[in-house]
Image (cartoon, rainbow, N blue to C red; front, side, top):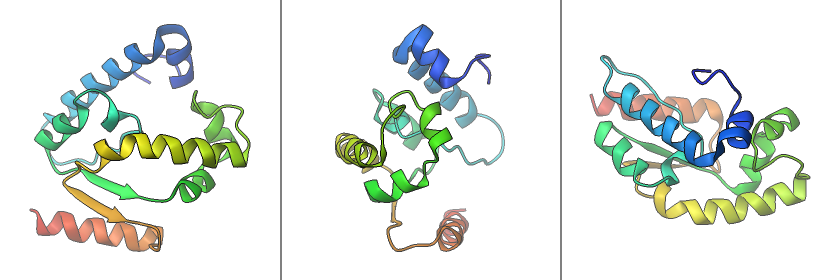
Length: 138
């Protein structure tokens, strides 16, 4: 929104490097702002350069561990079109892509201060668990 363009357009016209640098600047800006907040990044943010260390230095980070199949099922066809790397993939290709992609990103994600295994957890229970964790860390 700040860039005046969609993520897809930024990737296409300015490249991933530009997008990731802008994303990092926003993480730093929000992470040093007054007051408590939740910053929900895309999956690529923690795996870009030293972003995970940066985010850990700004506050608590939570890795919501899900299976590739779970993540793929949560992505609507419209949501896939908004993500440059997922555009045009059918369901089977999406799960295969997610499996490989998640394996590459796991070393970064595993550096989060908190990891929650969400495989058997409803969204409602997940929210309750996160709220409980945040209250304990206050």
